Each structure stands twice: as structure tokens, then as C-alpha cells.
Image (tube, rainbow, N blue to C red; front, side, top):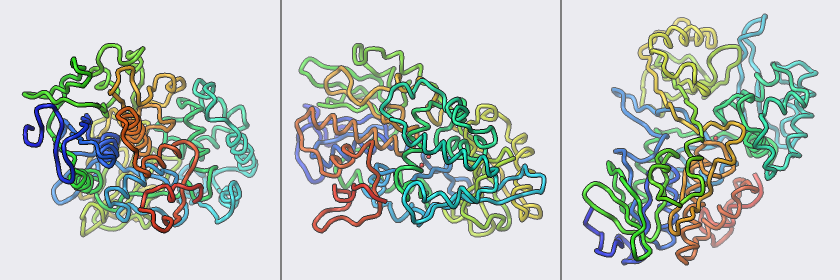
Length: 503
């Protein structure tokens, strides 16, 4: 790591000369965003990642001829920051959004058998955009549908800035607003489990309200779903690395940071095996426990709070069939252990048959279950859910496990999540677990990277790029549509981030 690093710790690279130097620790979405935003502002950046790849917990790997994502990750139209990231790495076309929200929901628990319903929107103002879908939703009674509408209006009136919301659980609030156990299962948890990685009984009202207000009650198109049509590694590793290289960021993988400390001249020492890097700013874009271990004394008033932020697992079940068994790109399920099923055939490179990925959130009871047991549990459920699977041959069945996939969005977690700034000048925090206001999603990770870069640029006295300024200013209250940039503006700049039209 000596090439390009000067004795004073500054780094030179393409398109620039020596200057202010920032070290970003961690190459997940938070770290990638921080590095790109800092470099776009003219800061020399070194990005250090302990893994052999970039992308953090949203990555791909090879299994024979298949390119496999570790888990299914989606985002919504209201995810302005992640959309900026896709644009910044030239990946927008590879992860398109639905033209209009449309989620097929299959219920296997009905006495009359398998029944299909849909959650979709109409081109009408909020909340009318979901009115027809809710009125026809067959998985709830007429009375339950009416009460859901009243609860949604009550949810819309909540003030997300009220700290009291963080201390309450979502299920208690739903019950107080007339929601039956069936309504919670068939609607509120259908969405909440996938976005929060927690059931309503274990979720903070503040975070749950944020999800539903932002995704379903802010703008007609806010909940339109997008997902990668290529392996995640192509977006978060290959394209991200290309963007970093073009920006002049020095990227080092397989490089673990062992300590971060202030030196006598007001700068920072970042220790890696065999070398010490000096920096004017350091962004710790790593999981909360790793950040706790790297924080110097006094950087946070109560660093032990980072260790109190719980984690929650996600289990992913992968099945390869010899034929097509699912016609839709994805389906949600009720009355079965199966939660969401996605068709990953094209993205994986499979040319014959169909590859399905089951995303199983809130997987505490199954995360350590042997593959053979999971196979016996889920293959019969898929045959119940998808009639075409009953005569299909299973060519491959495997499991991926993320034991600490997200932070646990439990009541009270908000008071534990720190902001980007620390009490140590020049040291910043980033990660989906920081105080972004969002649950642990790709959007939260990117927003945290924006906040950390913004704080560092202010401290360094560097001008902030307009695209960064737009994201920071709209961080909590505006959600963009698909309006084209105003004439003369580059993509991603302020003109895109107007009010208008998830993992």
C-alpha cells in the first residue's frame, strides 16, 4: 500500500494532486457511498475492506455455473439514496423499478384452497392509490379491510420526529387501532417482516411507522419495487470498483484495520498490518460491534450502547428446478412457512430450468437448522404453493445464512443508534445501524454514507457536491419520482430530488 501514498499520509491518484486525505474503513454500501461522495468533493480517499470483495452483506458468489446472491435484496422508488448510488455507479438500468406496485399474494390457509390476492396501486393520489386494491384484497374480511383503512390514516398522522414512538411496539399500536391478528399477519407483517426483519410485536412503532408512511402513504409511486436483474456483485463490487477507480479512490481489499488513533498533529493514524496510514478524516463504515472495538476512548459518550443494538438473522433457501414452476418474477405467501419467493434464473446465468430464492426474514428459529431438515420442510411447501413444482425435479437445494443480517428494530433501539459525528474531530460513523431514521436496508446504508461524508466535508471546509447536498437535504422528508433532470443539470443533482413520484 505504499504506491501513491506520500510520507505525510496524503494520497495521489488519477485526476488530482495531493490534498486532504480521508480513510474509509469498510467496503459495504455505506463505505462505498462515503468514499465516492468524498472523492467527488476533491478529497483524496483510501478505502479499506477486510473481505476479498466489496458490497458488504449484499454480494454474490459462484456455485458451479450459477452466480448466486447471498440473499434477495429489493428497494423501493422512495429509496432516493440507493437510487443515487445506482446512478453513480452506472447501474440504474440493471436494477429497474416496476412501472407500478404489484405484489401477488398467495394464501394457502383458506379452507377452499390456494387463493390469490394482489397488492397494487392505481394512478390516484394518496391514499386513494391503494383503495381499490385494499377493497378487493381477499385475504381479509370486509370489516378488517375497513379497519385497515382507518389505521392507515391514523398512522399517516403520526409524527416521526416524536421520540415516544421509538419506545412503543408496533403490534400494540395496531391492536389499539382495531387490527385483528389476521390483519396483522396478512397485511402489516407481510410488509413489515420483509422491510424491518421483525414482526409487529418485536418492532419499534417509530421504525414501522416510518416504513409505512414513507413507502405507502407518502406518494403514489413510493412503494414501486426495484431489484437487480444481474448478480448483486456486478452492481456492488464490479461497477462500484470501476466507479471508485475512475474517481481516483485507492481501494484495498483483504486489508483489516487493527486500530484507529489520533496523532500529535491533529490527524489520524489508521493501522493495518505492516503500515500506518495518516488521514485528516476517518469514516468507520463497519458493523456496530467492530466500530465499538475501533473507537478511541472518548469518541462517544456511551460507546457500550453500540453493543446493546441487537442483530437479527435472515435465512435464504435456494432451489433449482428442471423446469419453470413460477410465472411471476416474485410472489408473497401466507398460510405457509414460505414468506417471499423470487425468480433468479436470468440473473444467475441458469439456461435450463428455473432457480428460485426464498427470502426468510425473522429466521431466529431456523438460522442453524441443518440443510436436510430445511429441505424436508420447504420443498413440500413449495409444491403446495406452486402447483407446477409438484412434477418438477429438484436439481439443487442449498441455503445461505446471514446470522447478523440486520440490526434488530426493537422498541428503544432509536436511542442506541449514534449519528455520523463523534466527539473526536475528524472521526465519523456510517452503517445502516446508525441514526438514519430507516430500518436496516440498503437505503439506510447509503444514507449513512452520505451523512458521514457530508459531516466530514463540512469539517474539512470542502464544498459539497450538489448531488450530495440534495440527498442530505431530502434525507427524511422528500421522495423523488422519475422526473428527468432539469436542463443543464447532471443526473443525480438537485433537480432530480423533488417531491414526486427496499434489502
